[in-house]
Image 1 (cartoon, rainbow, N blue to C red):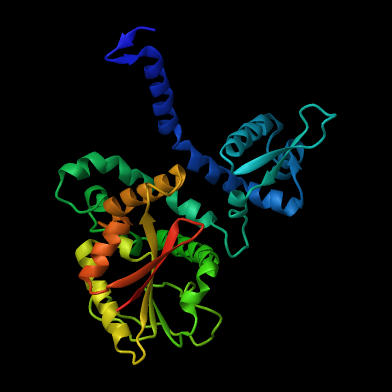
Image 2 (image 1 turned 90 degrees about the horizontal axis):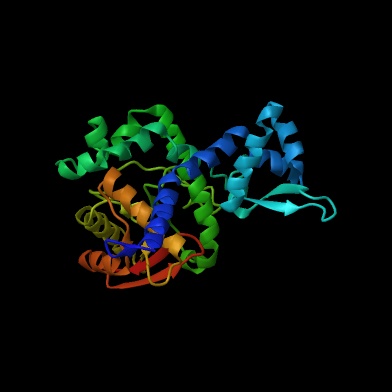
Length: 335
């Protein structure tokens, strides 16, 4: 085929398909929310086995004319591995049924690991609408797109002024913490032998809670001081802050654990970007999170070099990174 600006026409057509796929991807989270709004994950879970289209349509009680809409929705979600399509009987052509995958299992309500609230949070129209202001924000002096679009200082200002959004946010963070606790099972040795632990900015304390009833909530300012303990836990906290702010927090953590006679430790659960070792989709997730942190709270996701530079500036010379099977890593530090 003829060349256009150095590219073959076939290359440009492939580029068009790639561009359109990326652009239409905005529908993927919307369709997951659509399935949650219809209660499809719960229906399949409560059914106890794979469910056929007719059974699903009957359970949904949608008009028969919309049955094909459900089929087409499930086809897309199955293509994206949200659900799986099973062949029920080889002797019956077209007899298929839908079952849950590990991903859609996370959308079943009533479980500790349900992430439906996270889906609702990330599909919030106001939140999504902020990102239409990225160009304007880039040329402006504001630190966050929240300030550009809404006139507020940061995302934290926004949620604190919107109780409904704050409730969804807290529920989403709570469910996320349950998943992090699962990931930490492979790092139990890090938490062994601790008599006390401070979960800094830990919300409900879900991650730091290890079965003990000896739990208390203490108000304070992480930029001023942190209570002394055998260990300090920072779960997905530092990515919310700039390097300078992180160094202030880390120095306060160092002071809090250095006061222990036997020496304490700092435990960080956060994102570590590793483009060389992570699979493409995992790297994409981490880079997308970096854009979210950069634009909404003036924070950032970091690679190991970034983390090492940050930790050294705060006075930590020794650290070890534990990779989990999810997106997070655990960093263990000693003063």
